[in-house]
Structures are given as structure tokens and as C-alpha cells.
Image (tube, rainbow, N blue to C red):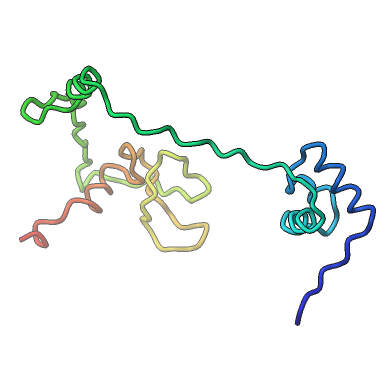
Length: 160
């Protein structure tokens, strides 16, 4: 099925020529007209000889070679492979893990959980009544130290 565009009315042509003479872009003119888009405005302006606002294209700067002084400055700022900068890292936090026999989850529901509380499931899945751990989490993770250790550190039986 071929779509035919609706013919331009003389009111639309007058509005296009007035707005184009005031310096409006084709996109802005199309927004003023109902049922017309930017490309149809560009096409009618081209066919009628109406000048539209042209984008100015900045010319590229010509390549000029660096002077000796500028080259020396660039050499000084480069990273020296033989003498790398020493970086002081923050101390590593040691995880305080609960003993397996003393750990008791808080059994919170999803509605009761806060942002920094463990989201490890500790019981049967019952939609909104599923129990979660609820203890404070390790920084940047979703689990408490106890569950973080379970989920991330491989057990000795699997590692061997």
C-alpha cells in the first residue's frame, strides 16, 4: 500500500516561508505544522526555493608540528616505566564471620528488609512470605558476612 502525502495548503506554505525568513530551523517549523515532519519541510523548501537555516560547520584547525619546547614538556609529563609512582591503598577489611553453630537468621520478609540487610533466602519460598536472613551486609554486597563466606569462598572439598 502506497502512502500519499497530503498536499500543501497555501496557509502552510505562507507559514513555512515566514518562519524560514525569521531564521527557524526545519525541525521547529515542522513542530508548528500539524501532520508535517522535518523532512517534508526540507523538501517543500527545496522545491519552492525557500532558504532554511543552515548549520555552520566549523573548519578543522590545520596541523602544526610541535616546537622543541612543547615536545620537552610532553616528555616530562609522560609516565616513567622504570620509576612507577607508589600508590597507597586503603587497608583491607577482614570479614568478621559468625560461628556456624551460633548463627541465627532474623527471618525477615521482603517487605521488612532494608537496603543494607542480607537478602539470602533462609526458608521455603512462599512469594511475599519468603524468609530472608536480615543481618547487616558486607560493604557493596547483598549478603551478611556469614552468607558471603558461604556463597563466595569455595569449600575445601570442592577446591581439592
